[in-house]
Image (tube, rainbow, N blue to C red):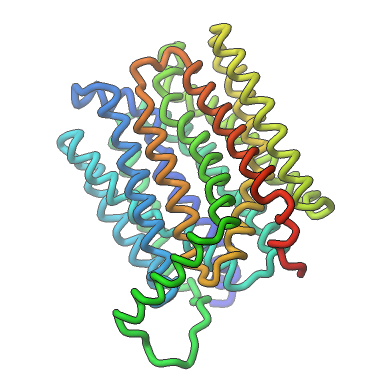
Length: 404
């Protein structure tokens, strides 16, 4: 038992749960054009399977956190994986694209708990500086999922069909549920008070939510983080179709997408090893400089119609490298401001996914042969996020972080 406790330690379980959630989002993306062909529907309707999952993910992000503040982190995570397993089964055996869209919504709702519980657990246990390092470290490990997932999904789609992606997710989710049930501890610090009533729960939820929404520092941090996440999903939503028009196969797409995620992995590694030597302000400034610079370079490449998959992937990888210096800090600051870890994580991730899903829905893949429009939107989004940082919280970042 001791050996298994060491193997399935708390950080390991958290990383694995988020790893599977990221796999669920990205594994089947190379198959999007083939799903459209299989059901004889438009590419836009096929893309709705991704948007529906994001909407469900966002809704889950808003509900899992507050519930975990009452009944505990462990219970919410276990039930969310049960929902994920059943919905993945429905995805694998969907008989129409509309059934797949609905199943993907519930799949997104189920996996929405993993990042929320991870943030809440880190807040339950670790001080801000250590939390930043842990978020950066786990972020790099978790980033392996979207790097590996499209490659596996492309291989499965090319060797079998798109349904095989969901068969694999069903198998992986079922296997992970066992160690979660056996070894996942409860980290929520409960008071000695009697169990809250339903009215008391909603009253506290309203009070705590109003406090966060009325806090300009929290809202600014959430908007910055949400804009950065939206940049990622705008690329994910269109890239499979655009790369297909460039003659890239599903398996090759997984390789090119892996390059872009590798940028985030390298950035997380550098931030983990050397980030503690610099202030949060310096790290944020560096991150914003990198993402704005390469967003502009990507726009120029697209405007010149240089449709080279490798060059585009390398530029997006550099953009992801910069993001690795922003996300851990924005998450740490946001979680520091909130008084309840679950609710704070829910609002943070809920806003990230909501804005991202709206961004994906607003983009038509019919014009996927050109990245120019998306590149321009991504550049403006990065500039807007930097402006919010510069004029909103730049001078207060140091005050918002408690020293260890």
